[in-house]
Image 1 (cartoon, helix red, strand yellow):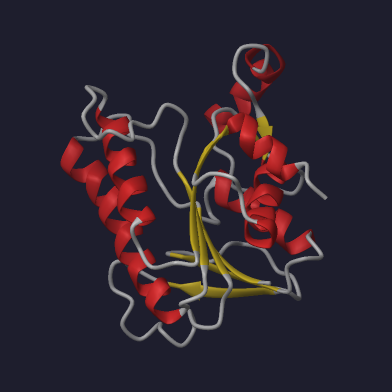
Image 2: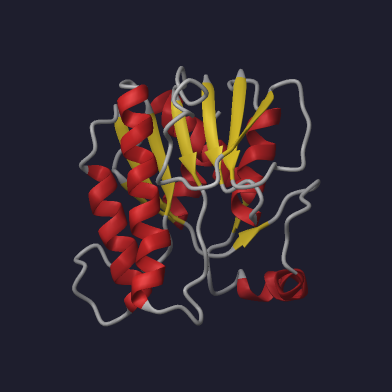
Length: 217
């Protein structure tokens, strides 16, 4: 399969990218972002896009793919709802609308988050906005749309884009993993590939279900 991966200069997208590059089921990977991924590989192509909401002129580069793994995003800490909505809802929706038009048989896997509010009515701002994004993406004319809701994630060997605070937090990973179902980003990436290969039983997958899909051979 040929896949697009966004957010490859962030921890999640980079981990998914590295898994795709090593996965024999993946023939070609296009890293799409505002900056180059910082990695080189025979399978890897790069497409630097200043604004995901404005893809005029990039259609040719984004055509001919079987899947899009949308891993771009930001933390809501310190952000107001309008700004967070622009990044977490408007940007993935515009990007997904474009790639769906260019690749009618594409599968979209969108990284959301644990405790996302699919009703869009809750009191927690980030959870409402992510729920709104999940619901809007699910209505687009893809072959299939899967919203992944991982919680604690562990980087993989070879990653360059890990924030210092997260590196410090990894010291506590064994303890946190006792209370929150943790996932290696290898597993998350394999689950995305397997969602394209085999499908999944539901459109919204929580951490346990992502782990099960990632374990499938």
